[in-house]
Image (tube, rainbow, N blue to C red; front, side, top):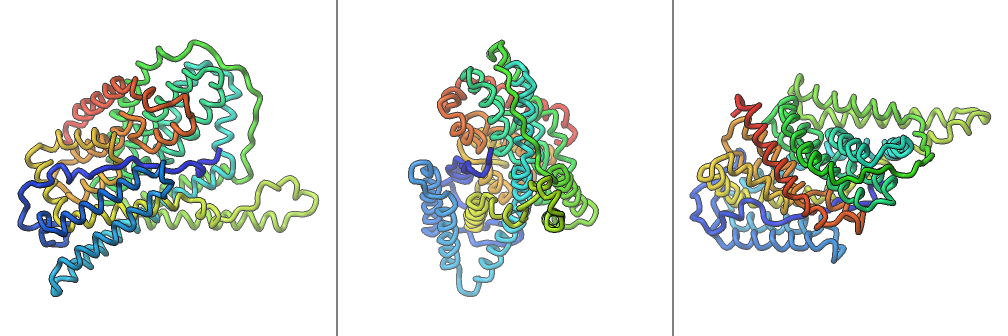
Length: 473
């Protein structure tokens, strides 16, 4: 399985600020520490919204136009910030420049962090770690019901460290390998995997882009996120327990396929864990940005790759055949395999939403959502919206609003933004990818059939969080 062969397609739409479009504007908006002139009811503001909507319409049509999703949002970001700069008086141009640099710095930290994580995942993929896990599961001769739970539980825990897309593709490869004679098993297992992968990513800063953004922003500490472990588990277990009875009570035919990991696979996995510890240590004990720890961990992989290459180079002619799986190992080849379209898509999203924040829409949305609606209702609505709109621009919009809410409410919006995408197959990158991987077996409507059960898990996870973490509200 080569996870890089699948596009990281994100469903998109209007950011949460659009719900307040047309309401009376505020006289002054605040974007982080940078004061900004309110342009929400000006021609520039309306123009920026139009550009943003048009760009996202092109992103949504990627499946039909085959236009990479990063291209329209990058263009939109440039147009929006140029319009803002033209709207400001000449004497205040420095405000726009500082605001842009602030947003660019936020993106740079996110991009470099993700780049290191993607590089490690690609290295593990190239060392056949994921293929070895898949072949082991297939060989064991588990029943369909056992595989249903095993793949779901593995997806839940693996997605806490790897991204939910890679995790879902790995588990789906297992399901397709053993379920070729049972389309019903494939369909319901794919739903289970999507729910599990999204839920697992919600309780760890490394599990999802939204949790990573909240952690890097310094709003929640690294270990604060683990307060969401039980609510996230409930979010997965409730629909899984309901779907369990629909899984066929049969066993797949046996298989003898064996995949051996390449030399260095386990050490690369260890280096990945060490890199995570380095990032956490830099942030918690040295009070440095986590990205510095991740980039330090990138050096670990680079030196280890050099060691493997030198080991191969100095091997004698008699044992070169035994270590032939060592090379080629060039860390920069793993960097090249990163999802650059996705990384550049984040650039466009961050700069577009940042531009709308500079115009004043985020302050306006924050006023309506968190002052008029109330934080709990607003945060639950964010999760529901993420079933249609990708959670990344939604979460960045919330972070740009920077509402004055409690730790419990920040945990709540982190939870809902992470698991809300499970309500529909198009609500997360994992769901979209699996519809392509299990074409004809896992579809939008097969997922929709189980949406009530998933919604029950969504509601239960929120109630459990508000109960067990009541002291944080």
